[in-house]
Length: 559
Image 1 (cartoon, rainbow, N blue to C red):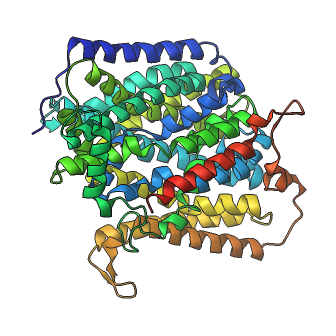
Image 2 (tube, rainbow, N blue to C red):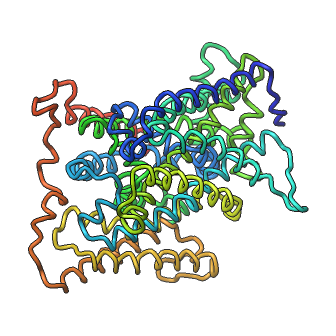
Image 3 (cartoon, helix red, strand yellow):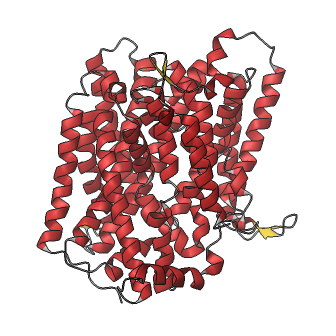
């Protein structure tokens, strides 16, 4: 039976030291980079490649992954690692297609790119979607999962007028600490704290993995890692495959292809809170190399957000709530003493804080530069824009805290986040793909696809919840069994058809101004430093080739 998660004085000291370190780093790097709009929102284009990659990883590796993805792997097995390991398609698109265009145009936000490529109408539409989805979909699920973690470890109930407000309490506590350094230091503070938080988070995840394998092995002899791993593999042979049947509820095998043009394209290549780090890089090479390192680390993330869930299944396959897998492991396999629990608790705090800081900063960036400056106050001073950005950060945090308890209505946290992300990605994937490869794609066509594609996906999601037992005779499954991956892909096909049709119906006009906004073979050219070729060991093609080989070898083992 799981024991209490008791903390010693050393544990509390380590946990406190973590917060002191985060605030010190935020103060050190943020104090010089928050006086102008460019400094506050883009860190004055000063971020090196390793910080770009680390911040991208920390932004995406949150408690939604630690809690939600481990919960999903507990229920479904290693196939959930498709979200971590299937990184070759998105990094190929980001490094060789989208980033060269973004960097060539020196954009500050993704909606700004859409304004240049299509027009101001699409900019407004995507800025609106970002400002709504970041707090209510992305940030709320992180706050809920983080609150669930801490409420499970420290089971105190907080009541307001007779109603359970435990999730609200922990969400508020989490967001207060995050908002302080995010609002003050801007992107520079976010990126550099993300970098250290990624290291702490990843180390904590590895400790959980090792302690879990030790529990499976039944001892700590010199070969316990090998023995425990072999036991895990042999006991869950059928759960160690990436490719799943056509009717799998989360990751049917067609999703390996379908998600490339929907979720993977949108999340990795057209998502402000991921791409913003690359836009703030100190050079084109740093931006693209940082993105490549982000994808490379994805190959080892299963040790943090997949295997712990499978270890918990090995130790106890009858947990009532899959979302509480990580708290179960922390109570069961992490021994007291040596400050280990304090360090892991710091890692969990890092998972809770890193993504919210990125989301809050990105939301304020989009609101300030794409709404406030463009629509409300075109002649606003730098000081006024900074004030608007900070107010937007606080309002984003408040909205997310109030919405976070609603996430509990979904059985799996993983499903709440991934399904709504997939539905936004359906029209977005079509808009960005045609935007960079087809010069004739028009703003009217893109707005039409967005106006139809997103509501279509949300309507099908509603039907799966309203009539889950309705029998679909043509595919021999119930409506409630249709994966959101299929819904998203159908929405993408519909959006593509609408865009192509509407664009072809419009009179063709010469648009020489969009030549730099569409892809060409110059994207394969190696970046240069002041016109001088970089040394061979900085070749993007070389490191990309190494990544491709490692990626193929790694994934072929689990197919």
